[in-house]
Image (cartoon, rainbow, N blue to C red; front, side, top):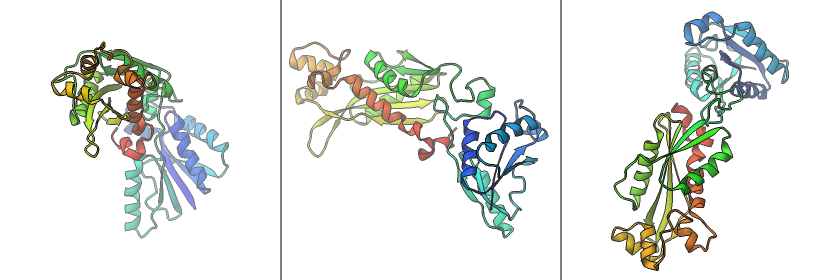
Length: 327
């Protein structure tokens, strides 16, 4: 059986390596269709190394894995994949899977067996956007996926605790980043209830995005548990990126004392209601109410970190959520 894959391989990177590895893993003879220089000139908007240089790079990589391969010039998008009965598997990326499905439809019409389609998830760069040759050639990322310029992240808030919680998580997944606090936003209320919490988080994120890579909105709101009747404080984080993809995450909730709930009902923020009910100062810019209620065992920054982390989970595994289809 023969496994095929094709492409331009204009800037050899981790995504290409992952696809070649998947082809090797089939244990079949491998045919790599490599687009010719003439094809590239008519289909690509940017310059690329010549055919021989691209072929050499692929050959060098594959030779470390197997000797059972060949590289053939590709003059068209599908080559002879629609007509060759010896082909059994095709390796594709999420963005080229539909092309493979069209190849299979053409093979079926010809009475040929469909190819097994092996879809290799996109390899993410440091900024959690896919590594691509075009991004490398544009000087945005390096072949390793690291960013040339810092990942630009905006967060709409007046509270430094939210910035600290965001940075605590981002520093785990990125090295080259810059967080900017955006204070140019407006909300209808400073203390949302239920679904309004999500709406406000969305507004904050969109206000923070601008021309940046990411916009972050973190909002704390009250949610009533209709089984027990208690009211929970839950932090909601919304992340929107430059491709208009939106993801959301929540923190765990903690029970809010009834005295604070009563104060919020008459228009106070949680912090104001706490200060009024317990004759104390406003804790909003420090550990938050949760810090006081938990005797310092849990802080508001912990909850911010938690909701930010959860909002980024779909971005760490985008193929499970279809996010790789929205670029």
